[in-house]
Image (cartoon, rainbow, N blue to C red; front, top):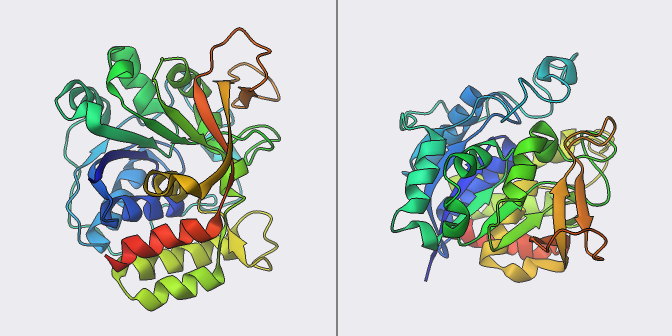
Length: 318
């Protein structure tokens, strides 16, 4: 049996790989893409998602969602300040793929999520969130019944050990901490969080890129190009002296196909800091029962890069 999924994303390069795996792997059936403001503005995340599905020759509906965070007018540090001195920030506004011929559906992503999960297919469709959680929080706020209708939520976000946008916070949770806190408190019964701890433990290398390129399909060649760009430009890589880089969002999709790609995890009560001056967006993981919160998520801590690469290769060969 194939696993149906919707990917909610802010498409930069790692989201693009996640979409390709979701659309191409024989064990998966990607039934929709919802886009959100994040890595780049909403119009670009939507355009990039269309570029990806056109590049691999797949027909998947794309629905544009929230252009700003749930409560805030902008990021905790506004995008123009965060990316000052950079043309685009780490992620390119437009992926290096041909201009899309497909167009977005015209239906708002939040309404699409509500209608899908209240419909007949809802209880059999995994929701994979690899961007800020704004769309999902908005849907749950408008229709709380969704929490009981989503069979599994896989989130790429957060960090237990370190942050990538501040000392404590990972980008997706930091962009919209109120949305992340809303989603994690909604009562969804099966939540897997794939944070930076796990994604940095399973980076993909130039050798993996060579193997993908040798497969020769559009998805494989595009992925090899994007991962090489990540290796060359990833913050802290010293301009490419490292041989590998994390491909965060694709790991969350790979975990659906091969749960054993996650090699260590904890069950915990998880929330997100929304008010801290130095810790806004930080993921708070209580796996020792120190808080009054009930356990609400499984948090991945370690992962296997070779299993991860195998899942991608399986998708591209198909």
